[in-house]
Amino acid sequence: MSETPLKSILVIGDTLEGWLSAAFLAQQFKGTGLSVSLCAHPNQAQMHAPIVAATPSLAKLHSALKLDERDIIKFCRASFRLGAHFENWHKGGKASYVHAYHNQTEAMDGVGFHHHWLRLHEVGKADAFDNYSLSARMGRAGKFRHPMPDDTKLRASFSYGYHLDSALYTEFMRKCANHYGVHTLGSPVNDINIDETGISSVTLEGGSSFSADLYLDCTGADGHVISLLGKSDWQDWGAQTPFAHIAWAHTTPKSPIGLAQIRTFSHGWTGTLPLQSGPLQSSGARMCVYAQGGEDKLADLLGTDDLQTRKLNTGKRHAPWVGNCIAIGQSACNLEPLEGPDLCFHEASLSTLRALFPANTADCGERAEYNRIMGETFARFRDIQIAHYKLVGHQGDVWDACADLACSDELACKMEQFESRGRMVMYDYESFNAESWIALFLGQGLTPKRIDPLAQTMPMAKLETSLSHLRKAIDQAVGSMPDQLDYLASAGVLTPQNSI
Image 1 (tube, rainbow, N blue to C red):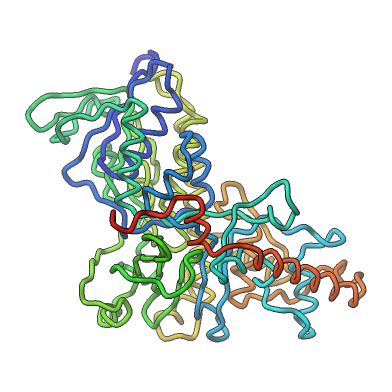
Image 2: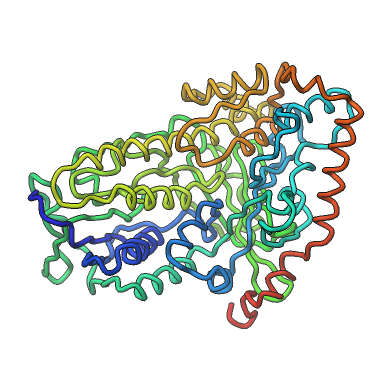
């Protein structure tokens, strides 16, 4: 490749990943002379389920795209996601807990909050750990109000994600991409032309050709474009866990819409993702991720025989950026939908590409750094999924085997340090903060054998009073908030019932 300025990008894939990538790049490089085009691929794959879960990081993408959140919520029938309610994930029984998007809890006398909670919990004087999280309590109660930075620290102590209708969100991003000047090729790809430098051009159905300086593979987990380059082998993670299949069906949630409901069964887990669908109404989808033998239970678990099923092809690319082609979304890494990896990876991929965007078409160091960062991002997200699976236990042969799942050195160290003394080890490019990990570990029964000695210096009476005051403050804050559907209605963003 010559050292000429990079002037053109072709996004391959008429998919959510494709349109989101195209819109982001067109907006970010508007006025620079960079052209962004998109075309379909005949074998492209869409998302796993009709509803996608987004972590708080997606708001960064929306902000970069200069989008109005109200437009997204209304068009995509979206709801605010405060986290996930996990049922039957505790290794010691059927207890439930909420992993909420809670920001760092302020330390008490320089000691992490969970150490103080553990001290009271040992003597039976503490409520459930998630009762001291505002976002967890909001989610359980079905309440919502945006964080208010200028209000009390408590009311600013949480983040939120979304539940989005996949098809509608794809259409929204298509409109956004068109607004920012993305050129749509009229025909899908028929052939990818390769030379010694990478992709030289694509041949479209009908025979015309199109070339670009950089190509994005947004075709799905099979990576129909980048796999042709031969230098980005797919690292199959299917053997890491027994969960090889996914099924889903539409449903009407019976619980508040602020939390996903994630529940284990003998051969896997189910997840219910809620949307709003009109005045005082909600809808959603229920998915089931399962191991061999779980297919016999699908109709009962999902409440219908009208199912969509698919085999999961979990794993990641050894190098998502090869030559002049970058795999984005599931083309780069494909995991079970536990904790919402897809859009989280998409945000990380695009923000990293923006930071490392090459100045020219020559071979460059940005490629190696991009691959390193994204490799770490994928691995650290896989850690949180494996941690969930390892800590279930005693619910049948499938889950008993999960206790012995192999894990990364980083996860092994994280679990060992927490179980030993409640210390939370964090690494670069984690998708979740320390509060999320602590909620997971305590919620699933990984209890530290000892706590920070400095936690013992606070008089017990003062500690009881402090936690009691926190609990009452959360009670008051949640009690003053509207139900999420009422809040959406007051903002004028409920989807009209007759438009569904």
